Image (cartoon, rainbow, N blue to C red):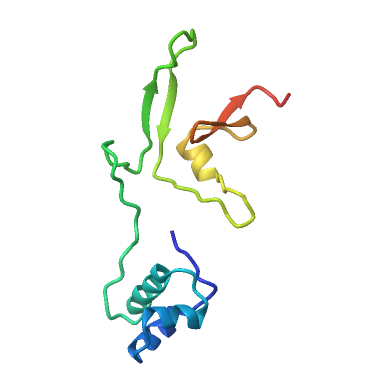
Length: 142
């Protein structure tokens, strides 16, 4: 995921640090909230200047689940005891979403239709289940 820091040119951060400024003073100069953001901009600036190889920042998984591939991982889950409904299907994808500044989350065609297998025109009920947000397909809005 590419993060923009108030349209700050990463090469300017590199120049300031090369001129002897500390991370803290660069942080104050550009009004950056965290020192880690200054470090991130510094690395990006070095990559843009060609001084270090371009690298992709990816989220590392520490779970014991198999690594996610291009194809979604489909797993059958058992319902809680006492339920007569069939097991549900859990589909894990490599897609991660964040809540934007306006409070919205983008769910696009590539995710919903191509990866999760829904169709155009499907209706959903949205609710929270523990720490999950669930999109439950329904026949039609009530």
